[in-house]
Image 1 (cartoon, rainbow over the protein chains, first blue to last red):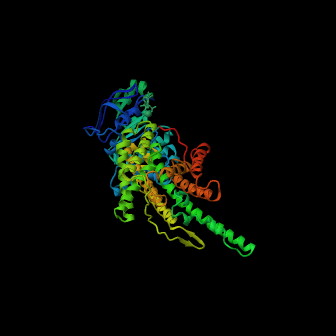
Image 2: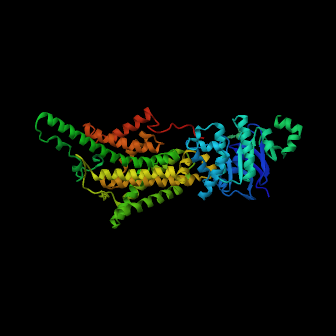
Length: 236
Length: 334
Ligand SMILES: Nc1ncnc2c1ncn2[C@@H]1O[C@H](COP(=O)(O)OP(=O)(O)OP(=O)(O)O)[C@@H](O)[C@H]1O
Ligand SMILES: [Mg+2]
């Protein structure tokens, strides 16, 4: 059974329809990519999944609709959303940001162990632990956002354009870490990207979003191999 | 703490108002008289500063209550003072029934906390996303309701409220301090330390800060916005109650007891920076000391002009430095 299923998911801002019926599924343990240009609706899709905006259609996590249909409820079920712009709690320290990632965790011993694992992925965070998170560099803030999401011990991680505004070297580093996290922690990942090449390399499946609709979808290898798809949707 | 006294006939007034007497001491020789007077001035100054710090502590507690709610909702809870008055009446009722004073205080604190949490969940929650003006008007409504309710239950005549502190003054060298003043300062500082530790050392306190500063981001982390708001109301009510319990032995208890105090508290909060808890405390203490010294040494201010001076401070700060001493200029909200 799929871990996450969207069935004809629609969303609007005010009078403007933005998502016109998205249907997709994410298998447990997979990395799945949502590709699309600016304004395609990637961020809106994530916000619709967590219930941050009103929607129609179905979102099923683990076969069930998300009760309460709110970001808090999604987090409690183990859906960690790393939002566009990283959601840094800028005035709080790095350590406090990480501690709040574990807000839904009750077992403090286990949280300590998770913390140790997170800083083993991102040693830079340990070095900066007492620094205000807002003073970190963009790349460091992205690492903090991912580390904070891991503190939740999520089953599913939603990553909204992790490459945004980062140097290519850092982006490759981050994608390598995501693959490592996916393998060793068993976290299922749904990641949105404009950098299609990089995302397809990491993901097993991909959905190409075009103005609120899914234009093409399939295994990454197939999309990569299809010249027409590559030219018209992926831009390389 | 003399200027909080409302009634000239109050028996406690004499203890604090012995300024005139000191100047009339006999002196032998000009130089000696000069130095003696200097020393007396310094002693008096020390007393007035401590007395101002005591008043300021009361302002600080209530100012902190206002700031805690302002930070999470961007509105002033105009009912904060009346809630404090109401819970102080509850404490009075307990002591009337023979409960020991500190036990009555503890029970009242618990009731304030639970009551304010319930009030937020029942009255504020339905209008959480309404325009700020709506919320402000609801808090004004609560002000009127709690004032009327207190009058209806307990009546309007002044009630004397027992002080938890000894009456004997405390001598430190040549200076004499009132135990009342030192007690108020001590209890307030202890409460502030606890609040500080709660917000800086506990996960829940941290989550409350995050929810107030970054509502959208913290919901994503699973922090329930609504409950954090309710807890904030609870803590604010506890700090407000503390100010009520500390001021009631000085000014006598009646349904209008907190009305001028809440103006001073607002002035303190604005002075410190309306979104800064540290600012609220420093603002309260600075305001308490300033008003006390102005009232003592600037004759025309006396007791009558203190409230207008507080208002002048509010207006002055809002014009010159709207973010106050410690506040942050608000960036646009998402
Ligand atoms: N808060 C909002 N109010 C109104 N319209 C919005 C809002 N947020 C997004 N939109 C519109 O919805 C559409 C999809 O936006 P969305 O942010 O989901 O795109 P995106 O794929 O994430 O783009 P990007 O790559 O630039 O982040 C856009 O046309 C955008 O203008
Ligand atoms: Mg986006």
